[in-house]
View 1 (cartoon, one colour):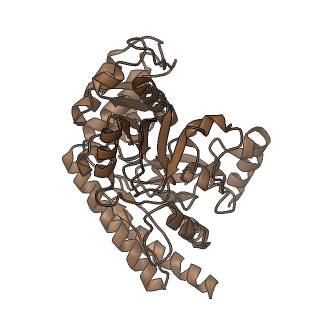
View 2 (cartoon, rainbow, N blue to C red; view 1 turned 120 degrees about the horizontal axis):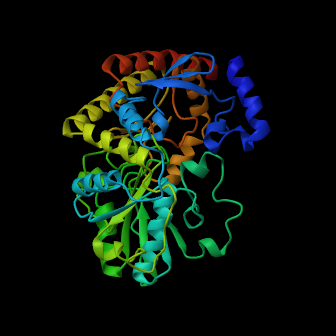
View 3 (tube, rainbow, N blue to C red; view 1 turned 30 degrees about the horizontal axis):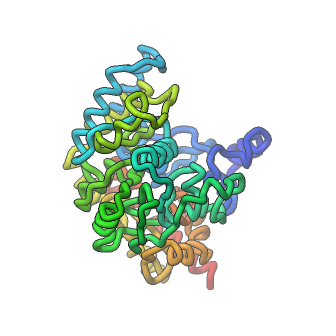
Length: 424
């Protein structure tokens, strides 16, 4: 890594744990020194030395329009000119809530928070309060933020650090958490308050739900009297206008959102049917609050983003992602590097092996075979930025034109040849 990035990292490690404010940014699982972003525009980011990268991180999902979209920047500036936070309700909260409810069939009420972690931990508390039960079922490799009860066997957030759990999480905090294999229906009883799942697992690379899996979870929850929670922090408003619930035709009881609905600003949300949501204070006995919840800048950015995501936008995103998947697969194959690139809509996974995984154990074997760090650095050196961890998905945006995608594939071919040569 070049001088300005190295010097910034040396400064950062003196005042920030590990030099970063989220562990994966430290390059711990791929090695090396992270690049520091100076600015971004559309499909690109520039580092502290002025080097440009084609960016497929896109802030891990919020950049669905591409970086620094003019309409989003304008909406943020207009909102900021009236103040940045009030501690009081605003019309902007109402408008965005109406937009979210309008787009999601079965979603009747929504509450905004400031992060995806807040959304999932609040949804779990609500599920427990609404059912009077304590048990939670989650799936190995699904990451639902860093709330204590949901960190067990998490995906990218902890897996990229080589962890299966987290120091500081007590046995009591996870005593009521059951971890099941993804794509396998769990047995539920009358102690289970909720089953929480990523409808498309995007924190162990990318693994689609097996046919009947989501439908089976819906039936199992109904039979047991448990609530089904879709963590759509990643998939929400990315796979379709109505997210994964629309794409797969399965309606949960509660949803969690983030990323896209904030247009790149800190945001989260959880929502569901009225009979569940009315257990929240001030209507019910389940407390949740936040000083910056419904922040007017985030509400403005989210509104503009959703306005721009019409049905045609999702078609274009899917076409772009399909083109990228084909281009990368061809580039790797030509170089003699075995790869599988599973795709669901505008989400793309990348594994180096012969067979796509169907659960976390299979994903882990591919993620830890040593090839991803080599390909990551070969691409980064040549101006293409993937996430610095093998458990992450790729996030093509509406700003990734055919020309940009084709350039990516061309670079990938050269990078793969270099990796194969190093392995020889």
